[in-house]
Length: 415
Image 1 (cartoon, helix red, strand yellow):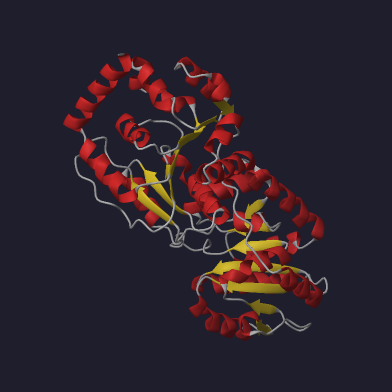
Image 2 (cartoon, one colour):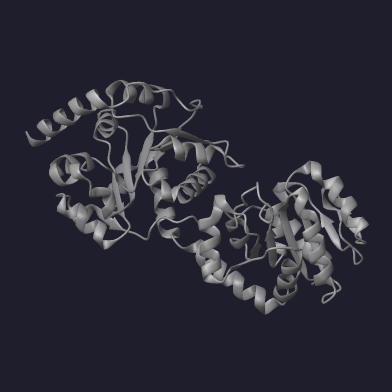
């Protein structure tokens, strides 16, 4: 009775106050769809990283990530890089018409709800359609609203059908326990944190290039913009004075910049080879150009030090540093990394990344870190950072596999 009265009152309130309309933010692609609701937008980078890793682990799976407000949706759509298997959309209001339109368009096969801030009307529809839903990274602050305090039975009844419950702290565990949930069903895990994906490369390519380099010191400048080439070449000129065999692997942010970068490097007096057209570096090569982003997995492994470009000048907002840190490369970066600031802050705090402001400070950092012990210490620190939260990510991926493969009872038994 308490549930029916509480839910009925909530539905009546939502019908009066919520927006009625809904327009889809993308196309529903063929194949299975996992829907992740990002209730805590401050952790959107980690949620996006989780979505990308799930896509990589499950062939043919598409992911929908919903956000609670228009500002967060605009921010994620303005980023330079998007994953073709991931759609972002604004979650519908709690009006029944909006919810029905949302569900008819997307028809997800599984739902992952993060943090808290439950939406009763939407979750009621999810349960009625028999769609498996899991709660991850739940926090006590996600269940501390006025509705949770005055209608705790409603929150409990909404959470009871969830196939898995993962909370980020003992405080969150106690909060769900206070709502009346069986604590035996609740798993305490580390908070959800992005860890980056290890970009692939062919083992034969790595073996051949390592043999070609023969132990030469190497650093990589990745995703370099047109107005960053001069500082990068200044840094290389400065560092090569102390390590005359030093090789710069130069990766333009866009393929169309490659010819100009070659000309600038040659004008600066460097001998250049172009990996993209099949040229291997020899003993005289000082700059190795590579414009194919698919080769970065190889070069992050080869270079103990990486400068993450698109960061020295304004307007580009940086690139994901975990791609380098996940493959054992110490990270250098400029001050303009707004889109990935939480990632850089975590690495810098751990001693795995260092900020530079111009060609001179970049050159000094490269010259210092090219010493094997210096780069190795930063690489170990970087690996520790990207490994944090791996337990939750791995468990979520296993849960997705088990659910979509029809093994949900097995997953519940282990919860």
